[in-house]
Length: 324
Image 1 (tube, rainbow, N blue to C red):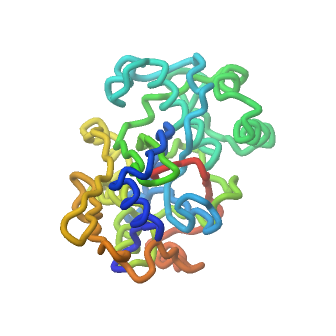
Image 2: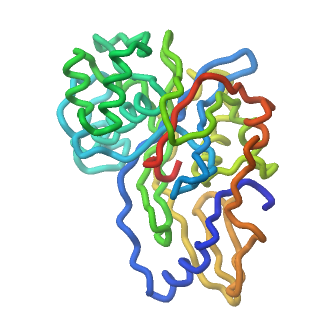
């Protein structure tokens, strides 16, 4: 592979089946994922995880904490920040309940997968420590779906801080993929006093890494990523601080990105509108690469060897995250 683009070997056949009318697209599930940022001496770092190679969807790929929307994420919660009406407009959805569910999913999944909670006792505060045993019991109950996020916040008297999130992008899994997600990407800054924790069994590595270093690992073919992951990383490269990146979220284009596949002569052409670097030319009789979708080895290139990465005790992961 010339880079680390995630490309499952079954895609060419599925694209042909879709073009022939032999494949009915699955309905995408709503999902949310968070580009969690923190400052370091050499510039902002983003929290990333490597999905276990055994995962059915994007195994071996680097991604961000995130996952599917729980229907109970629509339950009323104490809310701080932009109104639900403004969030609905920003996210491109019609109802305030759906907007709340997407934002709640982003906050909930960040806590479930990284131990970081964007909530506080008041509309202008944020919890500074979520490492105690009681926090861990609640986190596990959320993961098991034994506890709704609304009940969790209510029991602890917490306000969801939607103002700590900035909507960054929206990507929809291609119609020919069997597992489809309509995923909203958010940016957030790691709250003071909190830290990411190793709280998931679904990732085999997590790192804090400069976006430019993660992108370089992808370009060398050492880090496998899905198109939305590398696209959002490239979008972060220009910022000198985490706060500057979060502030820029308000200007990000939230038009949904959906891959398109077409037949031209003896080639199938797979493209993501507005993202030419991901275009694939697939011969009708084969695949574009000798080993499409190959996952990185156990060192995973730059992130595994510490080239610009900061591996350590921090962590987070999930199998529900969709196009991350």
